[in-house]
Length: 443
Image (cartoon, rainbow, N blue to C red):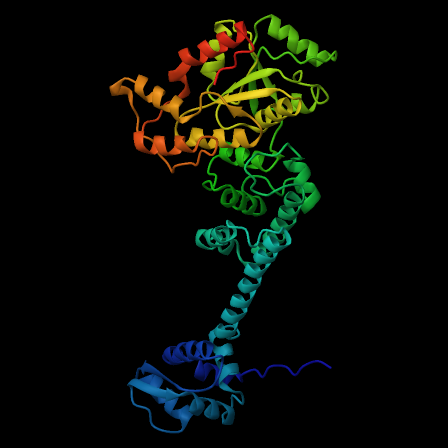
């Protein structure tokens, strides 16, 4: 059975009520009704000219003076129902002002309820991944609230994005410790991960909301700033074990001689014999070199943060194997270093004596590398050797140095940054000494 049709105002009555002189009245009444849950209650105060006052007098059946006047809504409702309009105030105002009235309080409540559901879903996503009690979870959620990332998208889009974020977070958490200290080996290419979790190979591309949520969660978990550049986003994905591409990120190697008989290992030995530095990509490490052992157990390999150190060793024709991730390692760098450690190589690492450099060193040592001239005494000697006019103050937040707790305290007190290239002479001396006498491993 069809619902009864809404009563339509007789044309003569419409013309009478819709006259421009009564427009202020209907505008005020509409606003009052929409703010008050469409309840016919209270009064409105309007200013009417002589014509408007005269017409309202005719409707209410009592004199109304021109100027400011208070009009009870119940009186208007009763007058309209008993007039030729034969309809209540809500119906008449809707027809006179162009469209149906909106219960704004109810709309607001529904919106609040919808957003409450979105935030509950975000907590549920963290809970399903075992991260709801993680120390970084409150900062992540509060950061999302303050950023307006979800609210700008709208409640419906936000709800879908949170559901997709939940699927990706659950997958990444299932394959390892989300936010662990060391980048994982690449378990996923980003399109593969997006296709599996979202059914859309581009669902985690730059600018897509689910990917932004994952990266903000990763930034909170790793204790780093929300990434702003494409390089920062690529590095953060890499720390999660997700490769955004296989060829952009590289790791430099010098004099690396894999022992296998496969073509790639033979090629690397040939390059070492020719004195060539090699840029290894993730594509190569996961392709031609996927099954190759990178070193014989017990091989000493030296790793550095700055390419100038490796370059100096190559120029000096020092034949000690070296690896240089060139700063914060790309995924290719992490894969190469981990495979060296897994092969039984003893990998010694040196980096910058500044807080970002110490943070990289901490991750290196957590991955199984060992320090090379990265102690408090090494830092004191390095600062003492700096020219007085070349000293730079440390910037950023201090980083714990568990491999030598005295280092953090010494750096705080000396407050001088020492970049690795300032120590080329000492580092090359170590490499030459080890080349001449492999049993004399530098400290």
